[in-house]
Amino acid sequence: MNLFDFTEIPADGEHWVRFAKDFLQHFGFHIETPPYRDAENVFDFSAVEQIPGKFNYHPFRWLVSCRHKAATRTAVKENEEADVLERLLRSRADGFIGFYSTSVSPPLEYYLTELKNRFQIKDYRILDAKFLETYLATPGFARIAFRYFSNYAQKHQVLHLIENDYLPILCEHCRKDLLKALFTENQEGVVVRLRRRKEKHEETAVIANMYVACKGDCDVELQAKYCNGMGLNAVSWTDISDLVSSPTFLDWTLSLIRKIGTDEFTYTTSALEKEIYLLKALAQYTLREPTGKTIPPTQKTIF
Ligand SMILES: [Zn+2]
Image (cartoon, rainbow, N blue to C red):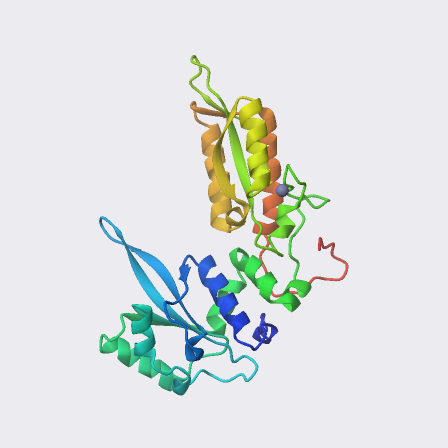
């Protein structure tokens, strides 16, 4: 049995496009609305990636064609991808991505290969059900998996406990739990480090405090509190949604260890305690590796 049931996403097509945009954005693409809009191609959009050169980055624009056929369990056929070249031209796209909830039919795959071999398109990729499942099952994509696949979210443990009790990551201003909010909304939180303003004789930068806040008003309020009233400067903003990806979580942890070991940088005890708490709270999400197993009824779950 497959880990993800793509029929959970409504068959109207609109939801599939929304899922495709979220997935590709999380994958590192910049999403663009196509310059044209007509009745036949409402399920197309553009995704842009930056190809690094020696001196500059060059945009590579993909035309993303969304086809949601999970309900019928049939592959996408050639006649369902009409006018590929014309659509690419109108989108000013370099390549074609088929974002499919099933698979691609061999004739369509052959047609796309021929377009590439004849240099009519630079490249093509098919992101089919198998491809999408592979990524959705990794911790970095958990947020998207839980948002679009409610059955999956109910069956699988969302967060695991590091200590006896769940460790929330609360906005210091409004007390909202920004860790749980990752699963339900786009409202994002930030972690902000605060450096003590240096005296003339001081050579070592001191991280004296840190806070977690909702982006926007809560962050602004807390900045005013700490930076105007307590002689601190906000020196870094990191999105919680970035920190819960495993590589960023590891980077964050390693850079903290390295910074503490240098002469230029130090922490107050209370700021370091906050960092340690944050690491443990983030680990409830980040170190969770979906295995496909459902939660045993006796096991303690968080939500
Ligand atoms: Zn808040």
